[in-house]
Amino acid sequence: MAAKPHVMVIEARFYADIADELVRGAAEALEAAGASYERFAVPGVFETPAAVRYAVKAMELFGEPRFDGFVVLGCVIRGETTHYDYVCGESARGLQELACRYSLSIGYGVLTVENRDQAWVRARVDEGNKGGFAAHAALEMIRLKEKLGLMRR
Image (cartoon, rainbow, N blue to C red; front, side):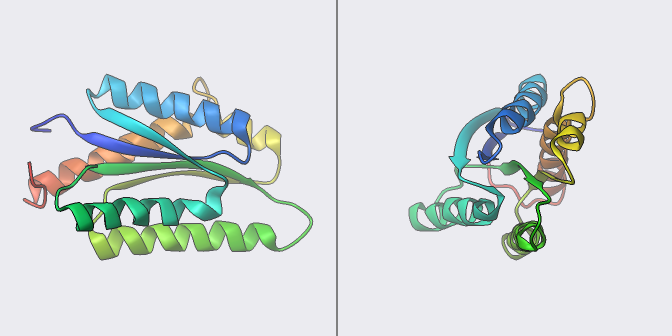
């Protein structure tokens, strides 16, 4: 990347311990790549698309991009009701819609699992490291935007 990318890390805090591990993986990946980042907490995964949209709106209002990309982290564990399906589907749909509508580089690090054990296998930095994977995905999409001439630097 030509310049040091600046990334917004959005962490859904509903499962705080899992979120902390996802953030640890993302932070290590971003720092290793020479990227800077700011962390923002939201209550749960359902709120993550709104957080990205708020950042886009701020960029529209104030005229210059604050973030080159976004890393969205969180966990949804299936419960006894259909709430899981709505949270998973709507948050993923919302983020994908934002990525396509506004040409955003978004790394998706939301775990959708059956139980906490599955979440930990995917979140742990020394196992699945989905936080690191999401950070790498965001950085790769930033690089692609640069190659296509879509980044203002």
